[in-house]
Image 1: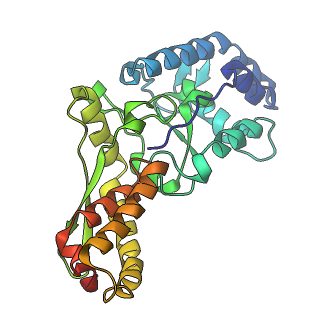
Image 2 (image 1 turned 180 degrees about the horizontal axis):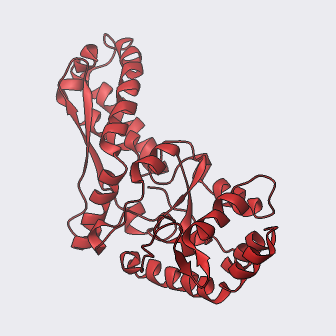
Image 3 (image 1 turned 45 degrees about the vertical axis):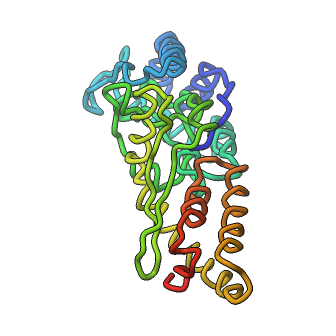
Length: 288
């Protein structure tokens, strides 16, 4: 997971920018009348996010054609995002692009791997239409993460996936992603979560939920297999020049280089596991 600074856009300005570009006067007026509701929802969202309690945010469980707030249907609320914020020709597209550009080096903050090409509603708009255009609920992400998460909603604290805007500190500074070398032909990498023992139980459970929700074990293993194939060619050139310890030192240098960038990247975990594998350093890479 990658941390992103909290967006400082006023949610009411964003909402009103979206509403003002609606040509249907009746719909525009009905949405404008929800300003207090939207402002309250945005404030509650930030409060609950800061206290790690977004799982308690009340959902609006109704059909798309049902009234969700005031005299506005659920579909009309969610359409504010798709019709007024996503469309290139609309004034609110500025906020969409700005939020998307906040992705660290263009990478998805949820997996740290894919290219961020869309915005994810951390609390899905299908169940929280009042948050459709609230910046704090819109996180840049890759299509894989967007699809894998779908409209899943946490019902208790320990199953909340990590939030790039709010879950920083120990989730970023402490290592919780690790890997093991599997003695297969070719060699493969198994990724796993090992949260620090000094963390509270909820934090330990949350990183595991994040890892599972975004199917990171399988996705990281695929990336690792490609990297190992390239690594074999490099190490094979030095097999008659380097000792086992020199090969290990090379892998440690690689691991530490990635560690300085992101403590919980799949590359950090992979190179650490390779360096710790006597089998691999003694020539197991030939089987890769």
